[in-house]
Length: 436
Image (cartoon, rainbow, N blue to C red):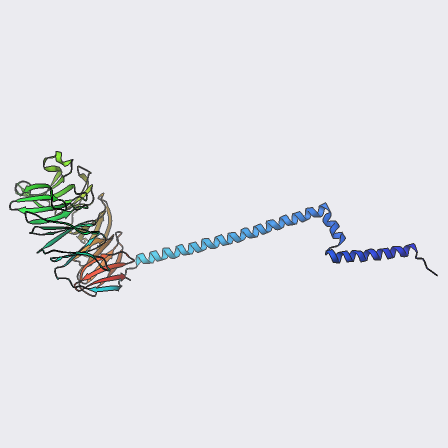
């Protein structure tokens, strides 16, 4: 007989079926109906949003912290690099080099009377037989002549070679080599060259001295007659780079008293209106001015035996600065922007004292030195002091860069382009060295 289930049994069976369906659904979807119901509720959505918002902010904070750490690392690295650089500079500034390595050497085959002068960052070698223009690697050009006693002047990339007590004049350009030559009618005492090749020559004519200006072909541009009785004896001259202005130092005796007259001439259109083209002059009583120099087109310096005077003016030079010195001047040296002086030391523990001045007459450096020297000069912004077997190098700030002996007898030294590179000329060789 068939048995019918009771109502309670049916409910139990339906419940079992529902549970089976729920388990099957959970297995297929991965979450239960209750979870889905909860997720569909507004409260749970709000909580989920808050959780996501918190998570986003948390991750933003993590990224920001990473960036801060990365930024700090960068700052620490930059700081460490800066400290290393500062440390190196301090160490390098305190250290005095005393070694060198020879990078290249070449044997000299020139005559004994050969001399050297810096020209446009390179080297001009001149002798009674001719000139050679060269760098540390090779000869750039050469020119032959025959002179008893050649004298040279340099202005930038221009050079003049004249025959002292002779009549020959040769003009050279660093780029082109020889650009002109001519002969004077009277014996040459001194020659100067301007940046475009104009030559000023002091010529001897018995009791009379002529100061003439020539172009590169030997055409006479201007001339000025002087005599010992009238003007004094011209002990030095300098022509401005533009070739229009001239400064002359005349040594004179007036009523038995020695004095020096500094005269400025202008051979351009402005000077034609003045007597003998003279624009200005000044007399220094009981003073010798052995050296005058046009440093540029507007500024000139007169090196006195008791100091120096700087003049400035496009047309009429006026006194700009004057420095008087109580100590005897042992040596002078200069470049386009700095004047250098060497004195006997005023301190017993040192031999010499170096002072540098700018073109406003302000002292910019003072340094004591113990080395005996034959020459002191500026070369590419460095001060080079040397004798036959020893040389020192200073910066313009007074820092001693190098001090040491050399392997052979030194003729000349010059700074050349490159880290600590110098060219040392000896009696038998030309050596490219690096200080170490």
